[in-house]
Length: 128
Length: 505
Image (cartoon, rainbow over all chains, first blue to last red; front, side, top):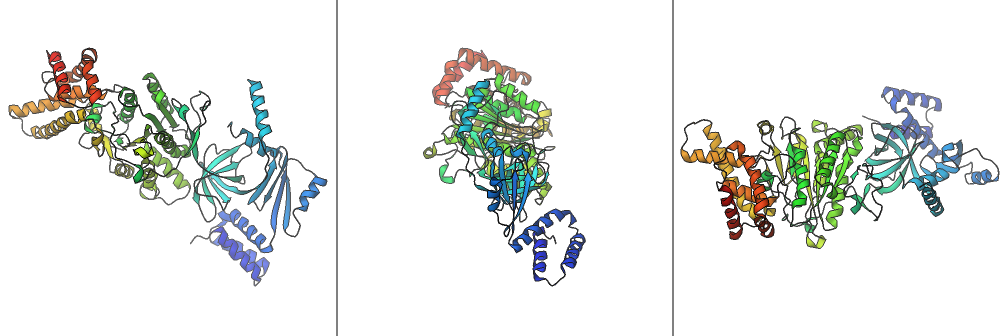
């Protein structure tokens, strides 16, 4: 029977929540089961699902702030204020292909794109 | 020129409104062979267009598989820049193509982009968007096929007539003259004087670029490109383009049908279309069935061909005729895809390899070919002459089989066999020489009434060509009379007879 990464992640987080098994042992056993089932090829997707599930469990979200260049100051502080530390893990990265502006991605599921690249894409959409 | 571009850009940039809003995004987890696997985008719909954001450009993809763990999508463009981790956005749009009157005479790809180097397609009018996948007209919107679509091929127009709105399959082995028949059909549309020429859409699926170029040139040389549109998905195109091409052709045809016009769409060929769909399905890990085709391969063609229709007057009275082509392997018409398409269509024209090697052109096997609805669309003039032709040919085939065993035959049988040979020869025709139905009526009338009886079988075809020239030069009023009444009335028959008597002398 095929076990989907989602099922692996669900079972893992449930056991983690119950706390019956030691955390270290649980991780070791989890990896062993994956290897035994021949699902090591799916490791990235399983890891992705586990991250999602544990995040859900902790009630935390990942806010990825991508900007065309590194920035600080009042503008940065105002932006950071939107994501409090209790509910968000903030990750920052520089992406020069955005040209200008920022892009905020939450949990790799939704994004707010206010970059110049988006405007250019919109302009050239009709020409490509 | 550069000033124009700058001005245009300035205008565009000043009109752009920045309206930031949250968008649903996903991530590419697997990519290869024109197919991508995407994680996330839980709200994506089947057949929706997604935009993959690569470092270089945005690449569209079409959602085909909605799975528990993610989405399987078909890349509609270059997949070499896509890499794992690229973000994917929804567009909330399903696949559509821009259509309009300016498409006539153009060569486009399955996404509607020009391929002929003649620049932008829509420069004057505003195009309309037509969905590639659309529901076929309902029973109530349709009416029966009643207007003929003359192919200019004697054997077809007389024995396997096609009507506007019909779906007639052309089936046969490779290099046997399938494309030649459809090219003759396209060229012949300009000779139908009583009706407006239908817009002809030729969809090349998996053909060699050289062959497509040859087809375009042939249409151009014969003045037929002006009312034709070529949708090209050549052998070098990705499987996604081969899969989409027939739907694009159909959508263009529907545009004309909805406007109350007649359109003819040729799918050359659906075997390669099925192959491309098989490739995509296997890459998307859908379960393979018979001959490794997926389970919905019948639906793939039935939903396409069902869109061919003759609409009733309330719906504008337009029509969409479909001529799908299927390539068989060693004449095996009982293979999976041929039987599927035979059962979907309203008849088939079967091209026989043995006949082809015997020198028969077109190599149509009259016994295996059939038109289920076309006879009601045949003109009365043709119906009257073809009725006798069919009967005499059937008797000839029976006698021919009989004489293979018995060499001694009576005089009447001998004459019948000779007449049958002449009738078979009169139906011979070389490529790119379509004959309009009026001349066909005169030729067949002459053949069944013994005007060719004294001609040697080998010379019948040449004599037939001379007869057509004779009518063109000296009895054009007879031809005009046939065009006008489209019937073999007493007067028309008298007129033909008179002309033939003079020719015979």
